[in-house]
Image 1 (tube, chains in turn blue, orange):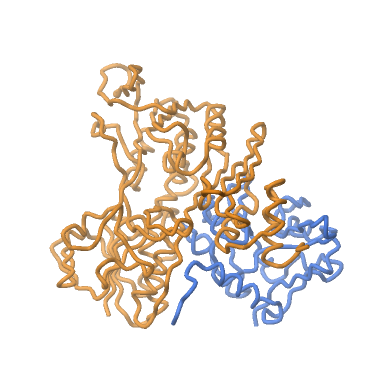
Image 2 (image 1 turned 30 degrees about the vertical axis):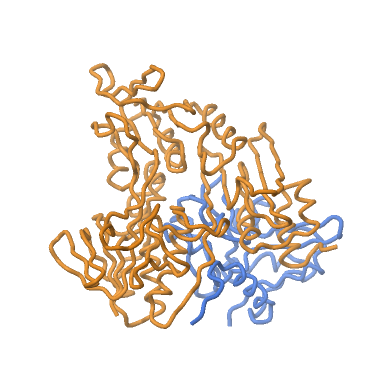
Length: 159
Length: 419
């Protein structure tokens, strides 16, 4: 059973521990600007919403890559960037309709969530269980997929 | 069932792979006329800066990929198509029969109608062979003239500059990337390049290229009389779809090979995809040649689905979009970035920090955008355009602060922050 990140914005306090854990795990520094998960603040509503890649089935980023640098991790289902193959062309960053593949000017490569290979550090760091890592079927992933389907240009596929 | 694909670029390769996914038993042939394994022209600038080797440009990296998925890759030139016999004639003398044919022949660089473009030392930057030539002739200190500051010109601009050449860019339009960025943002790209030591001449035409007996083998004559010595001239003044193969077949050709919402040409057994195809534009509903990587891939997938037996997919059109890195300054364009009739726009213009964002709305729907100096979450601009989400009161927030695109998207997609 594949697992996926489940985000409950109502539990998020905006402490940004997830961003720090992510950047430390992936970049070796405590720098939220280098995090693959991002907490957005809705001031007027007093809400915090953690947001990252849903590892969507469509994998717009992977399809758009001209050099085969984004691959499916068969163990976790995540779509992983192969840093040694990525040329930094950024086509994936405009192809991803969720805005969750980003270009790093420091490395000249793109970065995205890879579920930390199956042990997501944002989940470990979250003190309020706003981010959990659970069976994919239980996460509302269907809703995400419905949205991804709505985004699909080929809206009326019939088998 | 024999599916034949002419053209081994991204559209052709994606189509071949997708056909195999949909039909384990069909025969798939992929015919390309360049000697290398299928590769990406998009990757050539990175080859020129030695970020990758030639193998790094290949579209697929694993050994034996095409054999493993049962795609026959042939290196040959298709010289003619008979749609009545459903047969191709190859330059090598062979013939290939097809049941369904995909035209994915791409585009080729065009040369401006001036004297001297055939001289030695005048190159396009389109193929791996071109890249090798350019790499050989761009020694540090060489004088290089880049004709054309469109997308392709700009994407190789950095590669040329980083090879240590003395670079002059000549663009006949009034700004760089005129079909991708508006005046404000394109002006920032120009000033950025100039600050980095590149000379950029806009609203300037080359009159002729001549041989020179002086210290540099070429002389580029500009309209108005000035001339520039050059060791190398790169011609990036535009591309044209490779439609010649279909001339005389009766298949409808306009700007490119005209395809319907199934990526099918006027011949029911012939499809077209990628830079050669004139397909539906998501924003305008009209049919145009976009000639961009994401469209090539999407076309390949949709065409393959409709070629496969028992499948049918209607295509809503591709969003025209581009992303460009000009010497470290990242710019992007999406959809109707020039705006629509009776639309509204929001702008953030921060020239001191080389940051710019322009959003175009139709009612409360985002229909286009230009961004510059932004590298985080830009893809959500595509998401907002393609989903046609009604932004409601978030549109007013974006008019005040266009950088809140992620928040607006989350409000629309997840119902967060909806008053």
